[in-house]
Image (cartoon, rainbow, N blue to C red; front, side, top):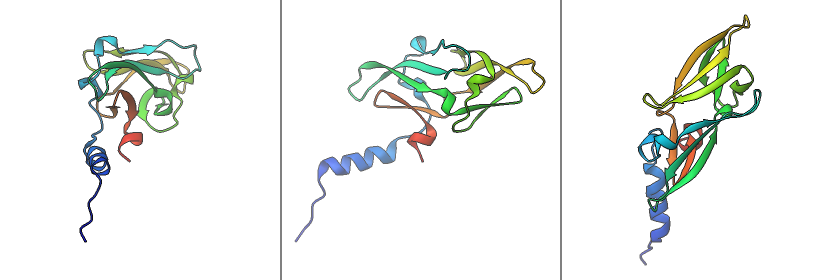
Length: 136
């Protein structure tokens, strides 16, 4: 007796195995990508308009405060970092696809710091995910 794997399951397995991290800018409108203004000590959100599997753009958001930490005025990737309580202002540098912030150092001074976004944020069917969510 020959066993046939349902097409839907096969397709889902193939799709899941081909999802790559990073490169959200390839299927998201960078001109409609920005950091949502929030009061200090609140989460920092990256908002964009990204294509879903049907090719339509839809609004999407990712909470960057869950994935970034400020260490002595330098932004690093780290789950549950909550950098927003030590960074005064953040914005997206659209040409370089970088998050730029003024963040506090240990001595209380503010320092300009940046973190590239394109290598670790992905668009999966119109939703923004960090690589820890999409690849691990």
